[in-house]
Image (cartoon, rainbow, N blue to C red; front, side):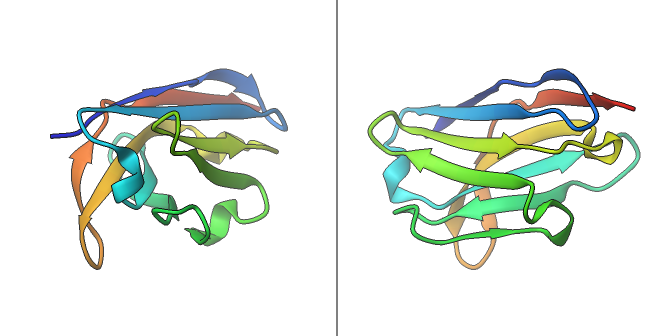
Length: 119
């Protein structure tokens, strides 16, 4: 079992920045690729970014490329999502998740953290 706790969400004005954290317990996070997802009411959950086990490779959805950066500190068992140049359309609940099976099955999820970007 892996327990994930997200933090760092909040209210920010458009153009501002936030850094989300995803802290893991139960198992070492370095054994897994980790993703960030987001969801708004009435919409399906959307992939945002993913980082490999070692942190060498990452991928992003097109709408956040150049603005968001995913990173990890395996010593701290934590994954981060740095979000810059935030837009109102980035408003959502953000979740981190551990990929437990290739290609894209995520078996452990956090409870989510709210990000609200005001215009």
